[in-house]
Length: 198
Picture (cartoon, rainbow, N blue to C red):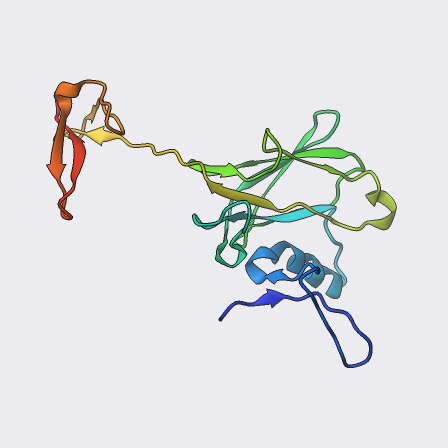
């Protein structure tokens, strides 16, 4: 249905096969891997640590991630902190891909600066990824660490009066000052709260 995939397949001769147990995934979820595969093909060094930063679609949940509807997040700062507290940083490209060309063997904490309104999707309580690169000095095999983001569910607004000045505002049905709340009918006939200027 118009979706490109990176397919992991194996076999003998002219016959290849794959299954749901492989790492086969939509292209949008594999931009980081594709970058490393192209580097290998072109004889370029692979990164010590790489991955992609992506925004999950609003309907995606933890049980069924809608990978085909992910959107790459470009220009996101990604930081790695080693066991001695030293920090190295890079940014994602237009496809959401980041890479650290070489990192000394160590354990690294990965953090990122998401735009306002987004949070990391992680199974850990502090939403922080940790990777161990202590075995990469000899093999030079890259470590993949993808970062998924989703909306944090928060709404931030600034209410202005007719002169463009910020006024005290609220969200929901409990205004800071009930005297300032009025309900204006919208186009669909429902009422929505607005703020009367002081």
